[in-house]
Image (cartoon, rainbow, N blue to C red; front, top):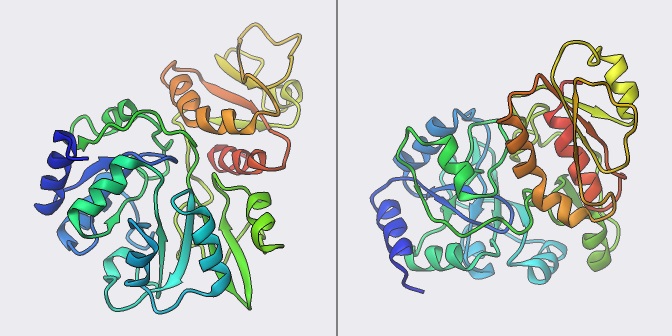
Length: 320
């Protein structure tokens, strides 16, 4: 696939610059992992803390094996089953992985993205790509090229437009501790999908690997508009005094009656179609954020499957 856009992206990367790339999860801000100059530009553009590591994107399991000391068999099983896909595997890195990628940790997160343009770009470049989400640190992750362009319109970042992201939430991050697979970050791959392949896994919600893995900061994935996560929308409006003079957006997947006049209602299509809600979550939050509301009240999803991941992202975006 030798499209002009891929060739342009390749030239930027070979010249130690940064490009935005599409994946099935969110758009990433990519650089050659071996260019300290380019990786430093990622941190500067995102205003990202230097101790927050970057996920490395590879084109194959073979390319992954060249960057790590070992792959425990349960993780290899999951890689063979879910790659390419929204699964990031945290592994002990070898000397080929620069410290500027990993925030000085001995581990590196690797994944094989499920997007033909980006896989072809990695193949043509011949080197792996470091690619955190293409947004300023802690803001809403971008799921369209237009969102990336909005964030970096002053920075002349080339965007490889691969269309809207089909998953819409970041990858699930896993590792291996005490002879057991451990989930460090919920993502587009549900806990249920993983357990169907290898049995029970460990997930505690909070992790001591907070600085070893991306997306573990308590405040993350957030719009500029204050977010209030609600079990009950009307009770949340009352509790936080949002029925007064503020202009409030209410995002719900159920019928809401007797909303105060200062509230505008936005609906999900369904409370049970988690995949559809996940795909549209960031785009919907981003669109509402541009409408200049004083706050967003967002109803929690059922805490199962991808609903658990959606709730995790909403909790991190909230003011509670």
